[in-house]
Length: 349
Ligand SMILES: Nc1ncnc2c1ncn2[C@@H]1O[C@H](COP(=O)(O)OP(=O)(O)OP(=O)(O)O)[C@@H](O)[C@H]1O
Ligand SMILES: [Mg+2]
Image (cartoon, rainbow, N blue to C red; front, side, top):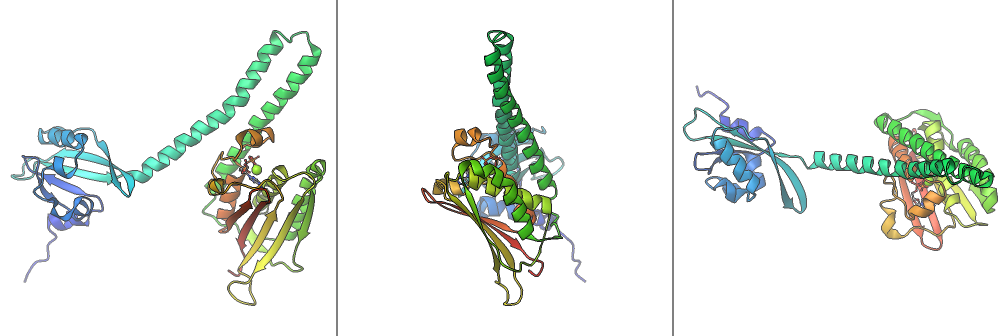
């Protein structure tokens, strides 16, 4: 009876990462399936420096063939998009033909996550540093030049208060963002009725809108099914969207809030509830639309700062809606206004 034994080739071929075995002349004696998929079917027999034309690969291979265990290296390969690979070379002892193994691991996603993290840290530091620098500046002035000037003192203290509250808001927003991110995989399921929720948010915002003489017009259906959600987080979503509509809306304009029940699945049961908030502001250039929900992204940095914004509002909104398994749609026309529509699934969907 024929024995069905797994050969080393079968094992290497089953590995998800490319593995290349080198002979003493640096030629590829064997490449597993993943290796051929990355470098080509006819790779066996070629010198490794021809297969991967990067100096780091050559020096790693030479080191391993000399019996050393070199530190892993990194190479970039462009296949449509640039991919980053980690290359490791290990000497093999006691085999007649194979003298070194080269393993290749795709690290693109880890690198991207690293980059996102470091950009985020750089942004946070920058956002905290500017109000802090201004606070330090005013403290110095108050200790020196403006020491005995009560008028200047009043003015500077009020600026300092503004800057300190900006820092405090930024920290609150960062904490809020990270707490939503931690829970993002758990869909909230308390029944929430959006009509009283939105009415409460409008009442709070209305007080601020009076100054700009902005009017809110609500168009709500008579019966609205409750949706699975988290009241506090949904309040945060609509507070932010309405605040934006007001902040970036024109004075003496109208903000429309409309709830529509979407019967996509069947006549009887609703699949989504859509809440749209339409302002009559300056609108958003189309090149900025797709980046709006990125952390710290603002169309006009100076204007957003002046209005007390941290640039984290829409990032928080996006994560909360994601946690609710919903989605956010943004439409805008420059000079006319913007509409932010939130789609939230119902219990039936
Ligand atoms: N309704 C709107 N009309 C025009 N531009 C908008 C509107 N909503 C958001 N934007 C633009 O998108 C940017 C990001 O909005 P986001 O809510 O994330 O930050 P923010 O309002 O600047 O600060 P925060 O919400 O943290 O106080 C804003 O800076 C603004 O440029
Ligand atoms: Mg905002």
